[in-house]
Length: 113
Length: 114
Image 1: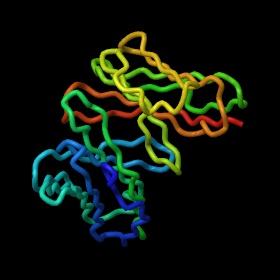
Image 2 (image 1 turned 135 degrees about the vertical axis):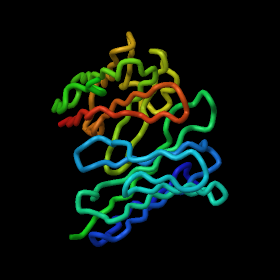
Image 3 (image 1 turned 60 degrees about the vertical axis):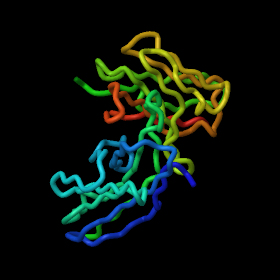
Image 4 (image 1 turned 180 degrees about the vertical axis):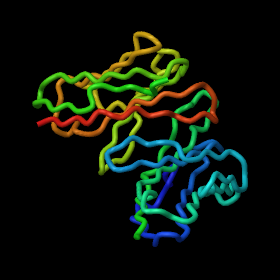
């Protein structure tokens, strides 16, 4: 199993619906998780981070962490065409001295008007 | 702060030539990361520095690649000699110390080796 896994998509969601993006992880990563959004031709930018089990909400975005099942999700409510992008899941390395981020391959999200 | 600054934004070079990519991290950030992104392989970590010291260069593909960080505000990634398979977008990112801190990315350098 890869350390961080995502379905590459594309995931197509109608405008106004909820988009659900998922990421699973192995024991080889720590418990700090990050969701980045990357528009085509642009650099990744942080959407949300989550470190504790449960949900964390920020506007239309909700991150969910389930440590027992080793998955982290990003929900986008009221999806807009401007949300169309690739979403990258990342986790910190497992050791205290390992500050590198372990990246998933990214899920391409398409919001259809 | 202006964010992470990379130069050049685009580079087209001939196979065999030396290429130098430059990065200025965010002031006060003590971690600097060099990434390469391609459609086939996604985002790959090449090397990262802590307080200007290289910590992990296991992602550097081969001896043709080298990276330096002579001071806290500047880093270079050099490819010599360049090959067509090096064509990719190269990102520099920086972060503060702490496992819960995010990494901030520069705008990237799109490298094309012909």
